[in-house]
Each structure stands twice: as structure tokens, then as C-alpha cells.
Amino acid sequence: METQDEVTCANTSAIFKNAWWQYQNYLKKTYFTGKETHQIPLRSPETHLLDDDWERLVLYWSRTKNVVRSMSSFFIFKYYMLASYCTLFM
Image (cartoon, rainbow, N blue to C red; front, side):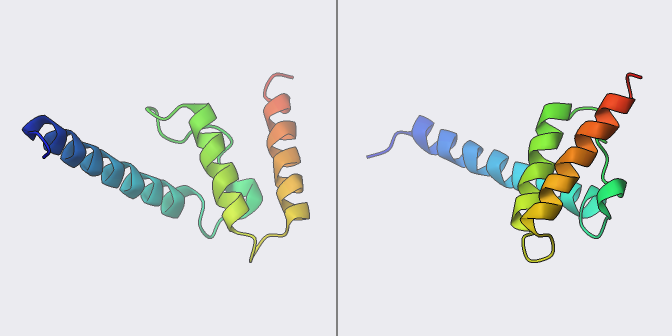
């Protein structure tokens, strides 16, 4: 039998997972879906989201868009991100 602490922990975890899922959907709809490759921000558009986390999300979304974007386009996208990042410091 589960204790009250285990139930509370499971409920809290479910709430946070749902909130994170909703936040990812908001980010995807706002900054990714329907955008051309050059329109996707290279750095996190949200102040509380790390740039590394933003890049992981964009790469994940890019991989799931295989119907629209071929893998060769994905590598072009990655090259564009790297080239644009490098020009920030020149």
C-alpha cells in the first residue's frame, strides 16, 4: 500500500510533467512551427531558458519534422546555426 508521501510525490511529479509539456508546446508554437530555418532564434528567446536547453528543443523538433524537412535540410539547419553563432563573435 502506498503511503501519503508517495501519492503526493506522484501527483506533484505529474503536475510538473504536464506543466513542462505545456510550456514546450507554447515554445514550439510561438518560435518554431511555421517558421523558416533562418527565422528560428539561435539563442533562447526566453530569459529563464538556457541556450543549451533551447538548442536541444530545436534539434528535437527538427528531427520530428521529417515529413516536412529531410535529413539533408536538418544538416543545413545545423550548419546555419553554427555559422550564425560564429559570426556573433567576429
